[in-house]
Image (cartoon, rainbow, N blue to C red; front, side, top):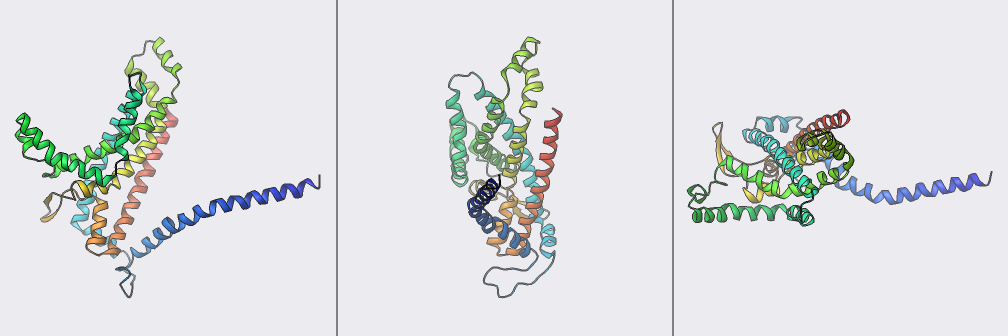
Length: 309
């Protein structure tokens, strides 16, 4: 008995050592790429930091945050980002759930449909934006000329703020819906067929099955999908840059600003284009806080719904 204890102790010690050896590279990369830059970013947001060429960095408190919230352009970027996020989340989840229902059915060629719906997600955002820019600027007007539609021929999609916003929703939904579809599809596969059979015997129609069986059983997939689409909507940048570039310009509270400059593009333009790095970092921290609050609220509500259902 006494000889077994040292062996067990040595085995436990070796397992712990191996565990730390395996985890150490991931922890090092996490600290180097995420944790340390995040802490430094928060610190720099309270200073007048101007980059590596600046000789001295001074602490300025909440000045960058106050100036950001007073900035008309930043206020507008926050507003349209919230509007875009609400519309985008609803559209993507509605389409994705519908596609998941379609490819989960007995439709012929459903495996081909699954691959086809997912493929747009593999295209990079910048490339995707330029492709759809060509479609909006060239294909739609040409198609309008063929069918005699003056509205399509006038190329209004990227020339008016409301239509440009719609174009961004369409493009982002086309890219991201296939990815979210796979999450819903996995959730639907976990629903037992016996529940549908029992409901059919009780005389339940399609809508009753959807409401009382499918949606409650797939609530965990809704939690994940909503979390991902909310974060994607607030952090969209590459499609925004390549499709509209923040345009078209509009007048807002007496100031000419970009009509589709979302919060991420505003942060980039503030930090890199205007060279106000500390203020741009403060706006990035504001975005982080907003995302944390919204994500925690959403996951709390949907998790509670999972338990209730």
